[in-house]
Length: 239
Image (cartoon, rainbow, N blue to C red; front, side):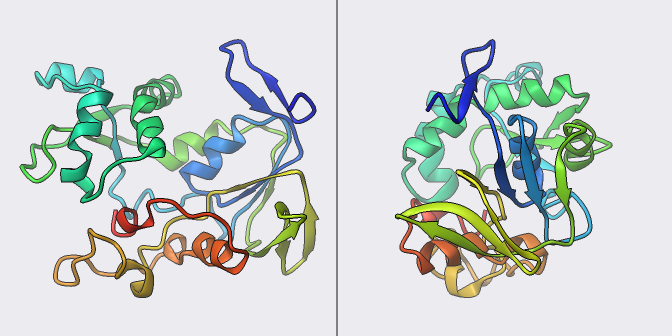
């Protein structure tokens, strides 16, 4: 609505605060860069997330790095290949992710991050994994955060505040913080065998549950606790 957002010069909606962001990994930091007033809660003492555990790899289509290696690609082709890559058919979120991946790539390049195209992998089809070079994804995003960001490290979110069927804030050990908008960027569930077993990519002989902090599945637990909607969880867990 007009009370909670404004439009940027590019026509994209920019949220005005306060906005609460759960998670200080790449997704949470990217969200903080695109709001006017934000409070970012990170459970650990650093802004990092799972980028190191993921090998600094990012999935892009239609990039300069692909062109330099003779790889012709598009969001449409990537969507057609999605079942091979993930084991499930993509949905609207997949289409959005793929259609805007080149924009994410270009934005990160503008911030000074460079990429190299990963070696061919017959299981994944076209070469789409891009390795982020030094200083790495998380340090690059952390350096670009707004100076007035209210950053709360060592502050794990323990639950959501639900009012009239909508998320209206978060609970922490230090107390409750309310806001009209809450962005959950708390990581996946690659550390949870009980959730991974429902993933079509889960292969106990190939994958080991992650032990890092951003893989506990907090967001899934909160969603189940409050009967919130979940989508495409069968293809997310082991990625």
